[in-house]
Image (cartoon, rainbow, N blue to C red):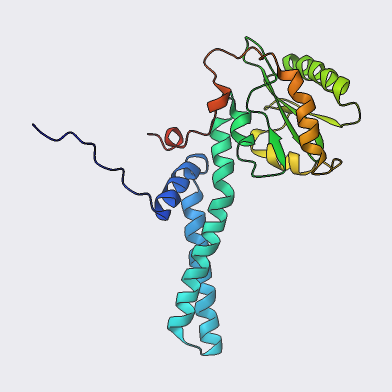
Amino acid sequence: MADKTPSPMKKRRWYHNVVDAYKITARSYPWLKWVLAAVIIVSLALNILFAALTQGSWVLWILMGVMTGILIAMLLLSYLAPRAMYTQIEGTVGSVYAVLSQIKRGWIVFERPVNATREQDIVWRIVGRPGVVLISEGPSSRVRPLLNAERKKIQRVAQNVPVHLIEVGSGEGQVRLADLQSRLRKLKNVLTREEIPSVSQRLNALTASSAPIPKGVDPNRVRMNRRALRGR
């Protein structure tokens, strides 16, 4: 009887991640390959020029030019890749949480929405040094009443804590998904690090009863599907 033991998964190397990041980014920015090539060529040309002017080691300067060009290209790719991913998932249900889940520190991110409707309008809540931030998905005309209702609830249990409202979308006055993290960084810090968990615990009482979750959405598992973005 043949052995049907599945073969072990192939170990991913760092260059696999680079290739995936390039494919994802190039999907949103078709000009990417030309820019990356231009960066390396310009870096190489400048170093060759320096070698000619200084009469230094050609091999050393050429090697330095290639390495510098690759480094700059990698930095550019690392900057564009997240924005490309956010652009590609923008407008899908749960896309805001996909961004919030990438926040490394400084914020307590609630994994379930605090409010949602049958039209798949969603309100998320996070707590950090700027206070409480309510972030919505959906048209402004529908999510604004949801945001205001949640703000009133929060102000009843945390009267002195600032509450910020952010609408994510492509409408007038809304914040694009790719700019959400930048918008959060611009908020002024008010709370101390010690006060953040205390405020979060007070707000937990507001989520004792689960919000209605749109059909087909599991907020506990919303993540950026990198395999889907790669087209697999």
